[in-house]
Length: 304
Image (cartoon, rainbow, N blue to C red; front, side, top):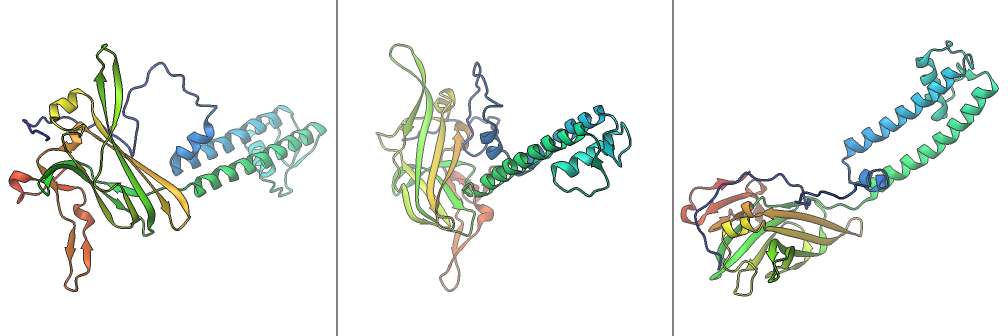
């Protein structure tokens, strides 16, 4: 059973959805060899900003080459970088207004190279944007805390999930692991993952809310744990959810993690289901992250 001792307030570490909560040193990053993965993982503003920077940089480079050729563009001022940039934009985008045209053989060679570069760039940008649009993603909301409370006479770890989209997720499965630092009998320190047995680890249709429950039995990795021992071991709960998006007929994944400070003993999640007069269940997501201490359930507390 999960024993409660005095509560220790700790600053919460910022974390993303399933972020890697570790400090990495000595690993050489492959920034330029994995640009495709980085682009797909980036937010839309960052991805569009990256494409914009590449577009501007390519036009500036070709504009400098045009300026270096001297009087090679008819209709443009000699040595004017701004005119050369505008001519480059018209060339790489295959606009060709006709006011500025290549005058010399060298300019025509550069135009040919830039036109070929523009075709490749448009093809690559189209593929990247399409891949980012077509990438299946899940919008699953996890409660900000996990709580420890008795359920049907058994101490249980509980947190809840909700599908933020109007679509349904079929054959949803959830897996919860307790990751913590352990020391072997030989003194070797290691980071070990222990799977937690759940009351229900799958749902045929995940449409609204799902409370995930892990009974803390004698065989549970959480048996006999305290907030202090979990913090000392650097423990965290790693949650992984998979399912089939019925709209796109594609498998989607969602991940989340709870640090030891996010596990609240002797508390319960605030009810979000209330029946209407006709018996229809009503869900209030405004209290999705709220929890109550068991010794003062009348005073609802929020953890933000």
